[in-house]
Length: 139
Image (cartoon, rainbow, N blue to C red; front, top):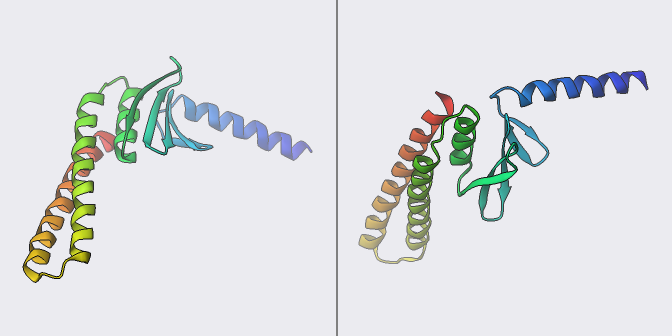
């Protein structure tokens, strides 16, 4: 009984320390960075400000949500820029999905080759945009 109480008290101390730092930590089904909360929803990722108890923005990709949350927790608002990156990544994601499906269903070799090239471009552009978002997360 005493060991359980000590363990519970220790967990509360650690969680309190994490809430005051800019280190992301997962609590339940959400990721918290200070007072900013990121939750997965069926339509993407929702970012909430727990201090003001309101939704900040919705993104399609987790990378974008984490970048926005980290910077908001540090007092920098990159929401507009990050949403633009999110839209670009969504465009390339949808393109890649379309080209992959077209490659599977086409019988013409020249069409397949063109679509494979376009698929490669879409994947490369997605990686480029993600690396730009990673700069906001890790810097």
